[in-house]
Image (cartoon, rainbow, N blue to C red; front, side):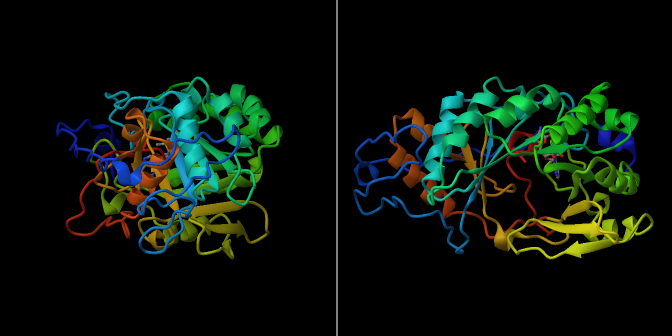
Length: 384
Ligand code: SAM
């Protein structure tokens, strides 16, 4: 059991910072004729020089295709969830102009990215988020299809933004919500009036047809694991997909221990006291194991990066609010894509740099192993 006092405790130890390595020099061998793609079109690079990887789809050195991009559009967040943030620190990294995120997304789309998830910080705090979605919706994959667009939000501002976002081209939304009781919700988020706002946002998003609405809940033993069954009922009553996520060592403080993690197997077992879960067949590339109840009503997902890692099928790469690429949540380094842009690099230079970074993607994370090194950023400063 983890007493709340421990979770709320502010650790005196300073955060470990890892210096961001400089990107490789962009010399003659990587330079290419500057070309601006027409608006709405992905970038189709030309080939100049031996190193230039051009139109090749992104694949890492283990042969994993990289098709899923997550972009954080601000480092700011209006919630201070106790398992995520210290409660004392605000944003730590810069935000970029929306046009820069758009350019990054466009270059990635030209390299085979098919899904883009907008995240943060709290993305709905970012002015220009609706316009950003509209511009992303105009992009096309290499196969000429629209990108699969999603957003992850704490939902506080969803009621007012759901319709404009849908009109701009958003199809689905994921809302983070770690309790279905107002009081518990307030203790977790450290925001007193949040529960009603988030619930209203979820209901409104359903009503206007964002589909699916997914509700993500991070379970912590002794803190909110008594909400498992309540969330099972919530999924059925509200017609949303509830997804439990195993707690990972990505917090600003140091509260993680293996004992706090409520595993996939435990969730399935404990849900039995309400109704048994029945697994829905899933493809290997899906991160969530999917379940319905024995009567076929409702959907529950469980994302188990700790007890059942899915690194072998990881197709993700992340871009932080300040334009750094992270090839794994647990990377010890960032890769400064925005530095390439600041130096006046062309789309082709960016593509070449992205290829060189993706090649370095880690084989897997090392959560729970001896010698595990805390990543250089916590979740809120990466984008989940
Ligand atoms: N503000 C947005 C939100 O609340 O969804 C996006 C950023 S938030 C950091 C993204 C997700 O990461 C949330 O669902 C949050 O619960 C989850 N998260 C934060 N810290 C985590 C941790 N240590 N392990 C697992 N998930 C975590």
